[in-house]
Image (cartoon, rainbow, N blue to C red; front, side, top):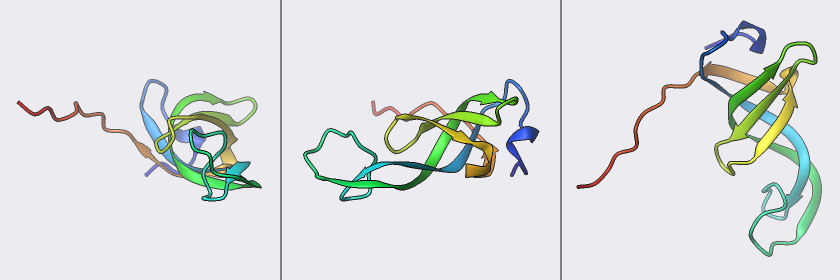
Length: 94
């Protein structure tokens, strides 16, 4: 586990849990989505994201959410459980 976003090394792959305040549907999913679910209003969305870009000056990270494949930009303070990503080839059936 990595203590802080500041401690990650350039060139490495990292992921973390994050929170963002966004418009949610009535099932708690970020909007817009491909369903016809009604909106519930703004709320806190938490998920796991792969860190794509780290902005040291503004202390922001751009993450790709593993649940929705959407991109979120969040403050460092809204990230926790930072760890390295171990990429693996998907299993194929033959």
